[in-house]
Image (cartoon, rainbow, N blue to C red; front, side):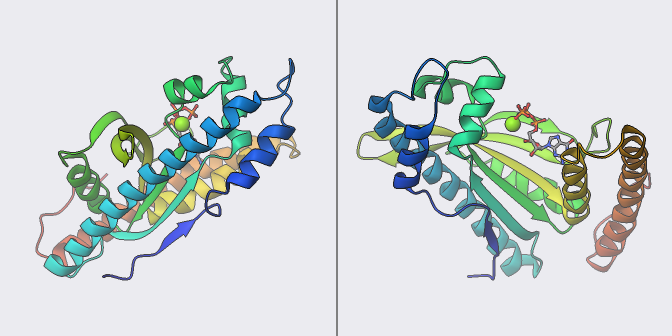
Length: 242
Ligand code: GTP
Ligand code: MG
């Protein structure tokens, strides 16, 4: 196998930790229903399986590119299951019921994978090949690379549904995959850090946001130039300049 790096952004699923957390959570009108704790753990295990299914598919594609073109499209991957606290917090923020059915029906990012690619061409190659696989479905696509957000954020977000086979049969489970380049990831990390810096004065926050927007544009130009060098030495047509 190729030397793929997958960073686990949280440790593996621990039923004991989930139990302890859920038992200690006060929903305002009472504790999280004890009879649903087992079901919650079962559900998280399915999400974890879905996350592994998709990351394995991505590793296999990366290996194939390495064998066929001597090029690794994927620089590295990060994957995580949303924590109990974030799951309940998100349902609460959206005014949704805190139940197993509500998680299943409303949250599509319980299982999340970030695929950090070397070049923009790799982002589209890998995501297109994954999306074309006949055993998974594309539930939603948000292309913030073609249409960057106002703040300069760029990434391609795809929500897939993948079957996870348990003793009870196939469970079609959503996984949110964020495809981005190293430059996009570099930018998003700093922007994310700034977002949580609420103790800075508004004027400095505004100034940093403006600078970040300029950085996003500069990074985009650098990416196109480097992509073109990469295409040229690999005999592919040039990308249009921005
Ligand atoms: P929520 O999950 O409720 O936020 O809505 P959504 O699923 O419609 O959101 P979207 O697909 O736009 O974004 C989902 C994820 O992308 C977020 O949880 C972040 O990880 C990432 N993301 C989106 N926008 C930004 C941004 O402006 N900056 C950074 N750093 N990350 C972002
Ligand atoms: Mg989301």
